[in-house]
Picture 1 (cartoon, rainbow, N blue to C red):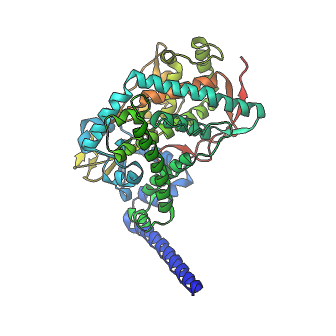
Picture 2: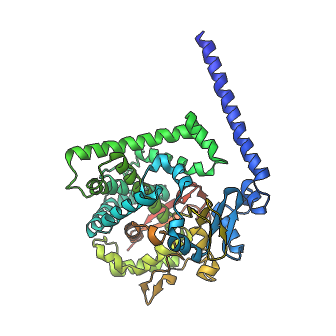
Picture 3: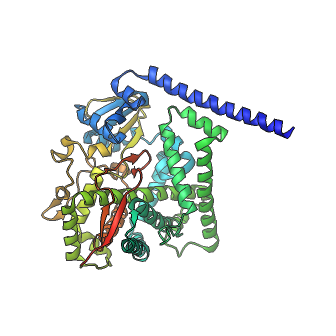
Length: 492
C-alpha cells in the first residue's frame, strides 16, 4: 500500500515537472515568434548574439555604438537602454522623481533585500538615505573601516599569498577577493567575523547562503516570463526552493546578531548595525537595511579588484608606474599605516577609476518610468518602460571618452600629476545625482589598500594570460571560472 502511494506521488510529481517545463518552453517560443520580429529582439531571444560576442554586455556595447543617439530599445523586454551621458543626467537628476527603482525590480529582489535602501523608493528610501549619509560620512566610521581593512590585509591576505608564492600553487584571485571583502563587510556591517580568508580557505555557510541568494535572485530577471519564477516560488520548486532556504539562513544569522546586540547593548560598538539600532526599532526593517549594505559592499569591491589585477597583467607599464609611486610615498615593502597617505596616491587612484571605467562592478542599472517622457536625445519613453543606463558600454564609447576609449590609460584622470574627477553622468560607475553611492569613498579606499599591499610585495600573473574575462549574468560583474593566477614574492 505504501509502495503504491509512493509510486502515485512520484508519477504526479514528475508529470507536473514535465508539464511545467513544457509550459515554460511554450512561453519562450511564443515570445520568440510573436513578441517582436526586429533583428535585435530576435538575436536576443535566440541568443544569436553569442556567436560573435562572449558577453551580453559586449553585444549591447556594439549596438549602442551603432546607434546614432547612443540609445536602443529591446522591445521584448520593454527596455530602453542608453549610453548617452545627457540621458543619464536626465534620469538620475533632472527627472529623478519620474524614474524610481519601480515595482518590477523590487519584486525580483524583495525576498532577499526586503525594504532595504536598494530596493525601495519614496519616504523609506529618503529615511534610509539620510540615516546612512550621516553615519557613512563621519570621519570615525571611515577610520574604523580603514583599520578593519588594514588588519584583514596584514593578518590574512598577505600571509595567504605568501603561502601560495612559496608553494607555487595556482590561486583564484577572484575567490580571494570575494572572501576578503566578505570578511570586511561582515565586520563592518554586523560586527561579526566569518573568517573566510583564513589560511585553510574554509567554506562559510553564511557566504555560501549569501552567494546563492544573490545569484538566484538575479536569475529571476532572466526568466522568459515572471510567471515562471513566481509559480516556482508558489509551489516551492527548484531554484525558488533553494533561494528560500538560502535567504532563511541569511535572515536567521542576521536575527541572531540583532537579538544578541539588543541584549548586550550597542552603544559602545562601531559597526553599522549598532549605529543604525539607535534610530530603528523594527528589527525586520533593520535586518533589511544591513543586508542591503552587505550586498553592496561585498561583491562590488571584489569585482573591481579582480578586473583591476587582470588589467595590470595586460599593461605592465601601468603596474610599474604604480609601484614607483608606492615606493616613493610609502617606501619599498612598507605598510600603509596612515589613512592620510591614501590621498597622496594619485596615480593608483586614477588607475582604479580607469579600471572601473572599462570593467564597472555593476555593468548596468535600471529604473522604471512613472509617466511618459522624452529623453534629451529625442527618445520617447512610455509609462512603465524599463530604462537602463549601461555603465559598461559608456566606458567603451568613442563619443564619450574619445578615440582611445578602449585603452587602459590612467593618465586621462590626471592633471599635473593630480587626480581630477570626471563628470559623474559620463562615469556613473557609482551612480550619480541623488542616488550617488554613499559608500564610494570607503570602497575606493579598500581597493587602494589592497592594491598597495599586494603590488608592493608580489608579482601576480594570470595562469592563462590570453583569456579575457567572460562574465556570469548577475547583480555584479563576476568572471566565469574566476581569475587563476601564479603569485611570486617581489624582490626589493
